[in-house]
Amino acid sequence: MGCGNFFFSLVISFSVALITYNIIISANAPLKQGFPQPSNPSSKSSDEFISVDPIIRMPLDKPRTSSTKKRLFHTAVTSSDSVYNTWQCRIMYYWFKKFQNGPGSDMGGFTRILHSGKPDRFMDEIPTFVAQPLPPGTDQGYIVLNRPWAFVQWLQQADIKEDYILMSEPDHVIVKPIPNLSQDGLGAAFPFFYIEPKKYESVLRKFFPEEKGPITNIDPIGNSPVIVGKESLKKIAPSWMNISLAMKKDPEADKAFGWVLEMYAYAVSSALHGVGNILYKDFMLQPPWDTEIGNKYIIHYTYGCDYDMKGKLTYGKIGEWRFDKRSYDHVWPPRNLPMPPAGVPESVVTLVKMVNEATSNIPNWGS
Image 1: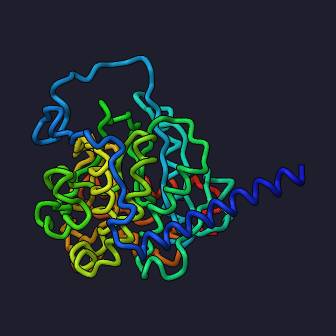
Image 2: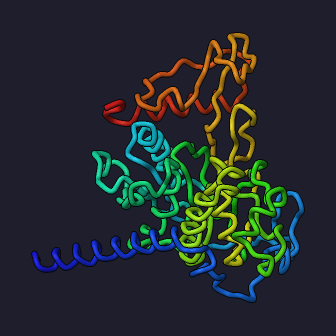
């Protein structure tokens, strides 16, 4: 038994060392050396092989048919071991469990991919895979670069039962059971208005050469939320990692893309591998700008919510009432946060109610 454990540890250590070496080499080599190629060079983008609705990009050529067979997806969330990420993950997982087996759900397993390199005290509460962080200095202070590297490790080492992956984030709250929105080899992704491939074509051509097709092959998405086939993601993830590192090293790309750099890197990598995406606007909402829950599946609380006591939005100015995740970057949010005043939109009210329910029911909250 002891020999087996020693051999297993030796294999894992060697694998991590080899991958780390490849990162360092790829980060310092010219991009054209070992540049990732699509798995099928003759594959085309979604716009070239299937007609789609121009608004939500749902396929028109084939009607969506019901099937008795579930297409389960595994939800994966990358996280550091900071207080900030940890409390968000605990709330996210609480609501995942609430809706996992609800009507219409294709939600399978769940993994928090912890890229701190070491276990923490929430391993028994949240299913967790411990990934190694990037070598010191590689992220250049942009910790998000650990996300693609963490996914590479997880996809290579974990036993993932489901055929699809939902890439999610700690600051996502699931509001109803999520079906598998992907279809016909296409991923399903939320379109971000600030991901503009056409606007940055000259920069993106460094990473997506003209022979790969028109710049419109790059979808206006990030890596989350995205539902994509597991085998497709296994091909995309190493390219996503390498292109993220290459973009960060390129002064022009780094300046152009800033805090959404790895989102652009994922969009480019998906296009390079011929994986188009259904742009699904109802995937999530983002308060305070989205005011109603409607048919959405996820609340993404990335923006601060500031209001006066008359229920008027005071964005850009700290409100008399506020909920902003950044208020709790080093401390746990307390239980029973005060509810917003009358007149505040449904989306914000629902978010605070859901945060309060989770914190009231999660054992040892704040410790």
